[in-house]
Length: 248
Ligand code: NDP
Ligand code: 8X3
Image (tube, rainbow, N blue to C red; front, side):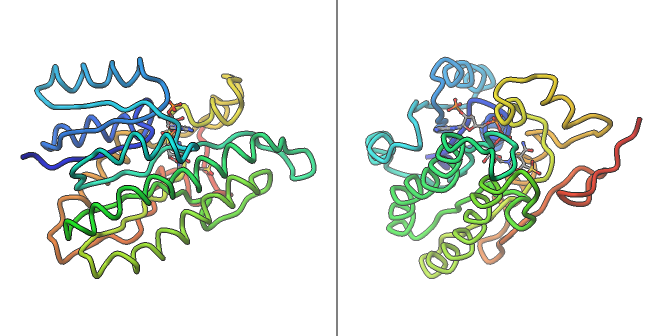
């Protein structure tokens, strides 16, 4: 039986690129997200390249949907907790509480719900590898980003604690913390405003979803005794949340 990889948020960006990459590495993929038609398209692409992909459309914010979708999975060797978003970029006195709920419910509670179903399966098997997609925002809080940064600080804390919780069972935990990656992230953050989204990448060659997938694929194939705990990845033109060298 091939190794089994479960990827949340595989309809776009980092998750989609990771699904395609891990399929090329020989994993059978379970791809998840809310947009079923995009999942079907991804499954067709993977099948056309000779891989195997099953799809599960659900919302990670619903514990019931997460349980119903994921409890039947018999084996998961690799989990990528990737589903997430930033919504809004506002000072705290002007933020929309619906955006705050979406970020906390998806980035923090969704990751926890998925992990709560999959981690026991890995512990029972005595092996597994969980990748949590954090962010440089998980250690660098920035203006206008209080709630997104808080959600990724939570992912950073959860990743460190769950690594300690799971290591005796032989389950690895790797946190991947990207800077600027051009995906649908900024379009979602600015609620569909394409110009605002494009300005984020003005004068910069950002990372791509494929770059992050490359890092995940590398960390996933390391020998059993070796783990990448925490990996920070940025474009060469970025040094942190507050410093990007833009070429014009
Ligand atoms: P995209 O918007 O391109 O992809 C986000 C994915 O998350 C989509 O597949 C989306 O699927 C899924 N998702 C969002 N909300 C839910 C939900 N409630 N239930 C299920 N799936 C959901 O962005 P990225 O690929 O960039 O983002 C992936 C991760 O990377 C996020 O956690 C983000 O915070 C993190 N990150 C991104 C960076 C960047 O610069 N792009 C930098 C650092 C971290 P669907 O809408 O179909 O449900
Ligand atoms: C995404 C990167 O800098 O927009 O997590 O927070 S940033």
